[in-house]
Image 1 (cartoon, rainbow, N blue to C red):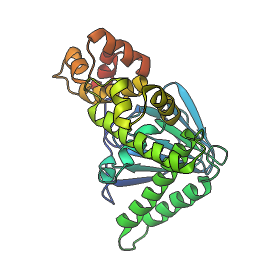
Image 2: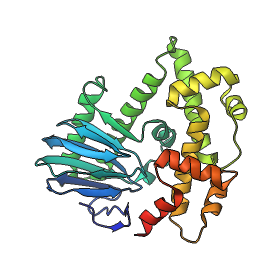
Image 3: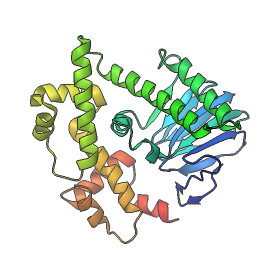
Length: 285
C-alpha cells in the first residue's frame, strides 16, 4: 500500500483522481510507522483493523471510521485477515474552504468515530465512505467533484459534532454559535502566527473575551490550554522544518517561536516522545 517511503515520510501517489487515493486494502502485512501530508480515513468493511499512533493502538471495528490528521505518525502493527477502505486526501484541496483548516486543527490528531462515540453522525459517515468507494471505482463523469462533495460533507459533520461537544457547557445556542465562530477564527490565527510572540492576554483580546472567560472557553473548545495548543502548533511547524538538513536544531527552534533551544527540546520531547534530533534521524533513514 505504501508506494513511496523516504525514511518515515510517505509521499502519496494520486494515480487515478487528482487529490484522492482510495485503497481497497486486503494485504496481510504490517505497515511501519510513517506520516504523510494527506488526511487519511480508514474504515474496515470486513473484520477489524489495528492502527497505532504515539504508543496507543486503536481497534477499528467493521463500519467504524478512524480519521488521521495531516502529519501524524502512525502504523498498522499486525496482520489481520479482512478488507478495509483507506482514503487519502491532499490537504491542499481544502485550503480555500473557509474555516476547514482551523476546524481540522481543533479536532484530535486521531479520531475514532463509532456508533457510541458519534451516534448522531456515524451512520451518515459510513454511507458517505461507501458512496465515495463506489464513485471512485465508477466510470461516471465528474467523479472528482462528486467525491469532493461527499468528503466535505463528512468533514463538516465531524467538525460540527466535535465543536458541539466542546461547547456543551453553553446553554444558549446563539451564544454557543457565536463562541464557536470566534474560537475557530482564533485557532486559525494561532495556526498562522504560532511562530510569533503570542500570549494569553493577546489571544483573549483577539477573541473578544476577558482573560479568565477566554481561558475556560478555550479549554472547553480545544481540550487543552491556550499555551499547550500554541506549543502544539509550534511543534507541528518545527516538524516540517526538521526535514530540511540544512537547518540546525537551534535555527528550527528559533524559527518555530521558541526563545531557547532547551525549551524547544523539552516541549518537542513532551509532545512527540522523542527529541528533535531523533525525529530528524527517523526521516533521514
